Length: 137
Ligand SMILES: [Cu+2]
Image 1 (cartoon, rainbow, N blue to C red):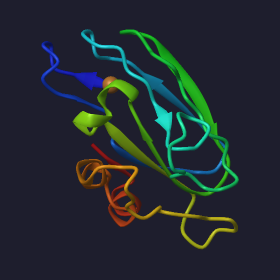
Image 2 (image 1 turned 180 degrees about the horizontal axis):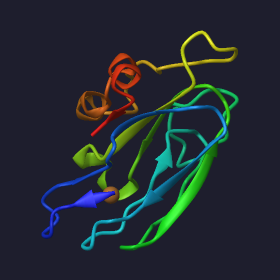
Image 3 (image 1 turned 90 degrees about the vertical axis):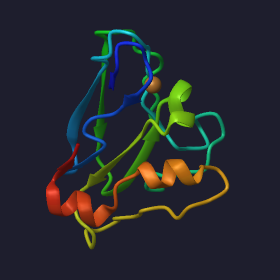
Image 4 (image 1 turned 120 degrees about the vertical axis):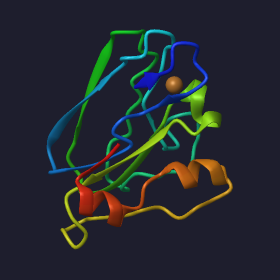
């Protein structure tokens, strides 16, 4: 989680990442000027449409103050999209690919819907790009 000193721009970096199933991920707020969340798109989180694999556990870090962090473990293969609650409108979103397409149970990415804006969809790197580069800044 990053941001400019006056908060004109905020973002997740990397915005796209591929990991193996069972990897522990740390969300760290390195933005001195803002609190952020990393929140999975899922009905359990504010009744959003699911954008993680059907058998995956949804997560919501809650608000992380500057310097705070939270960790999650992603076990189910597939594509996970998440957002920052106060900054989703600024397209502060990210995508994690767990495993590779074709692995048992692999699911995603979810198609566009009325639940997310075109700006959010445009900010999510493609699965192909993430798989090719490993991490998208
Ligand atoms: Cu944020």
